[in-house]
Image (cartoon, rainbow, N blue to C red; front, side):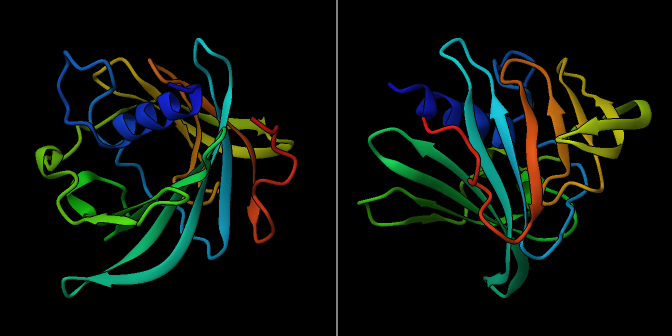
Length: 196
């Protein structure tokens, strides 16, 4: 299995697994505020034992499912010999939590798109509330940002900024660490990314 598939699985676990201390992945979605900026995107690099892998999270268009409205968040990762694999989450409200995902769409090149409205049925309990560790200013991806660092009961820490589109994440530590390398509004979020 390629490292890109491993990272994709790890990210999906990070974003969607039920909160259980015995899980390898940190529990639940982080539940931090979304930064909805039309056309906004953030590119990250995830570290694994096989080396770094980059992925992009983008703010998509508004959408509806089952009479409820939300906003699409698009997670993309370039998978060697497969192409760009995407997970599209239709999220209701202002925070990315399992109970707010109205629809999940999985797009793999050469395959029929798959959709599920109950992809997180086992994880629909509220995330544990994080503790604020610190607030300050950091230079990230060449820009000065206001950053808040949170600590989660599962031993994970996450840094969040209102300047970073989509999830607002700057850095996440834990079993599947990743950090922000570029962000913006409009244009190609993959421009300048290393080819896998």
